[in-house]
Image 1 (cartoon, rainbow, N blue to C red):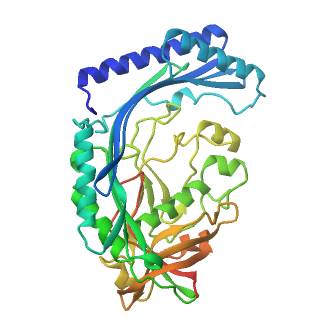
Image 2: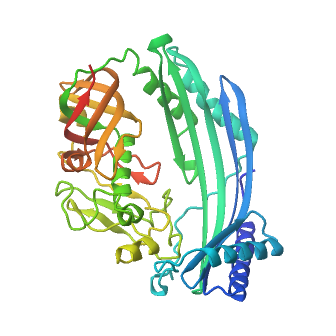
Image 3: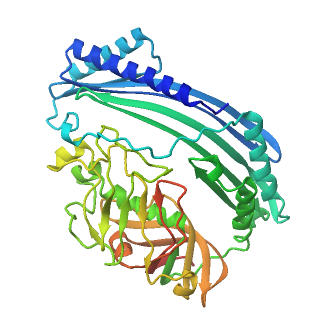
Length: 448
């Protein structure tokens, strides 16, 4: 059962806070000069069905604590799934032992006290619902049945539904204590159409903080069938340069490459083509990318990051110009900068619609390649080279002509960023990065 009353929630949070405070107390007693600890508990249910039968059913319940201690600039970390007093004591002892044998690093340390969060707004992340195994199974079955209703669907890899909730408390020896709560629901369906060498596979999914915000399971199944069937009779394209329209899902991965290249770890390791690029114009001047950590019901919403630093809304890209990096306290110190409040990653990035943006970017592109899926790991963040397998549709005169498979799209990320012509209004908000379709004026498409 995935449900928890308000009273149960507060009682559990009080208990987690006690465990964190106890770990910090024991760390100070053991001789740590600084310490931080986090404790969590979670529960959920997950089910997968295939061809009308239940394949997997899992009930999950997890709890644990992790402790990080510093002896001067020596750091040690340990964790435990047992929250009894003796286990917390053992966890602290192991962390202290590790710290004594590690090398000093002048960049180790807690976040600066003045940067820690002092306000904790309600971000509307807590929406527990009564969801037992039977209800989860029924939702997955309805999803798959709706998808298989299309006669052109020849097989199924299954439909799934999962629901979960989690509570956590983070604290450190700078007198910071922060509580976090959240629920999450997800459903998906993967279908196949055609036979033999002409078989095609595609999927659809939805994921939200609140069960009532999700599309119906029938919608997810029907969309999975639509996406799968439209890929039948796919062909290859002749090799050449052409405009490329990235679907929202693929555009999100492109933004993810930007995030990877401006993340502190890649920067201080000299493993990014965007090192020393703050203030540089990377995109067209109309383009903005916002981080919105306080977005209500957002997948990545949080009032503080993994170190207790207050999160804030900011423009990572403003008028095409890179405004700052994605940094934790450690990576910031390595770079001689200040943390951006991104320990644990970015939160609810939005690639704002704009440019030569109409309601139909296929017509805007006129002729080109509409990419709905990319495959492979051909992205080099050190050089900025981009080369990935792709599938989608040839677009002629603003209309989809036929399905395309077994081609490669290639270019340089800098050029791809600079050559964005438009970002569409159909923004995908299911995950932590939000984007509409992205139209790029030209890329190399390698096919026949």
